Length: 490
Ligand SMILES: Cc1cc2nc3c(=O)[nH]c(=O)nc-3n(C[C@H](O)[C@H](O)[C@H](O)COP(=O)(O)OP(=O)(O)OC[C@H]3O[C@@H](n4cnc5c(N)ncnc54)[C@H](O)[C@@H]3O)c2cc1C
Ligand code: FES
Ligand code: FES
Image (tube, rainbow, N blue to C red):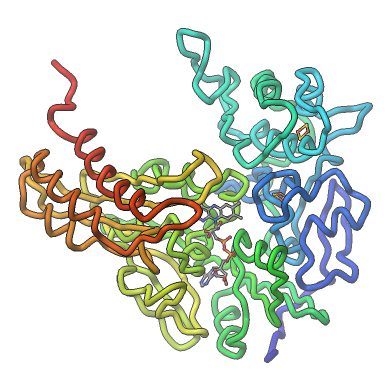
């Protein structure tokens, strides 16, 4: 590789359960899970090695967006060890011991939330992350004593969506979660007040490849321009699967997730710009519902464990035709910003995809950000049709952004995923709606057009006919939920 210097500044090391540990002779592709287990910390388990089961969950100290630290649960099977240089992590062993259990471990034991125990270290890490969440406050419960999926203690059950258990049937685990009190005054709670560790320039040169963390955009772009074979890595929720399951290795991996320009969200009166590497959980927190389309999309994307690292740049970087963000971003008329050492260019996302997993992005370019123009339309919806509610891949996804004024569709943009080799705009359906009254008649006609958009395939997830039918139904549902007849009687 060309010119990695002057990126390295100190011997790679991280803090594990309160003790600074040098990396030692790890390879450039070693995962955090493998390092932990090779070093005697065998609490975290390998169930699937592809982010599906959560048996490997650990806690990483990450910035909370307000100058403090949040203990963020991540899938250690997907995180490259090298990306944790200078960082702090806690595994189940660091939470407590059999003699001095952590409150989440004690609650799990008391509720019978552990049987064979294989999933338990991962569950307690996800649970501890939610236990320490600073804005977790007691939640009002419904008349039947139930609070939906939030416990009386404000515990959001969805924080466990990436953890699977084969034994308990989940109810005892929920009981344990809902029995937790407010965080005590332990060291992990105290850590919340001080900033998370800064990123470090990292250089790991090994026989299986080189891992570099660039901490500035010019560094990353210079490296990329001299090394077109390099793989960029942000959250590693896709790349980690490639490494583990398909045994992919790259001569050079460039970590870009802590570059300030890629790790920021900026809003003006005319647009919201989201850095390509901002984790989806952080986008959800920072936007706080300001972009309803993303507020609908993000909870349906994978699991909390995955969303704590997965980014929009990674989702667009894979150019998968079944990625969930492209339909939503297409409907929002988003622009994608591509940066290289010599220039930056912005283009509509609709011009980005060129074929199955191919795009206009050159090898020396990275995705810097996406820009969502404001104001937003007044009808927005994201429909993900999948077999399971959480942690599943779309059979088909549809996003609608319509501006309806005085009962007429002034503008319509519809983004589709899972019905062609690329995500696409449903232009014929948009034409069938635009300028027409927002009535059932218009919608039924446009739904028939929508059902014929794209070239859906039969595969193990769904038949082509089902996919087409779901497109039509999504528009009918949108109308049913957003038509004057749905207004509450006065
Ligand atoms: C269990 C599981 C569930 C999942 N569920 C979903 C789901 O519901 N919906 C969905 O859409 N996806 C899902 N995914 C896929 C994955 O989580 C997403 O694609 C995610 O957005 C990838 O982001 P990342 O930051 O982790 O990407 P990475 O793994 O870091 O990178 C992915 C690819 O994009 C490239 N890349 C990353 N950042 C950039 C950039 N800034 N510029 C250019 N290229 C870049 C990398 O080189 C790599 O090729 C799932 C994955 C797993 C493991
Ligand atoms: S081992 Fe299954 S999610 Fe990591
Ligand atoms: S206790 Fe056995 S898998 Fe959860």
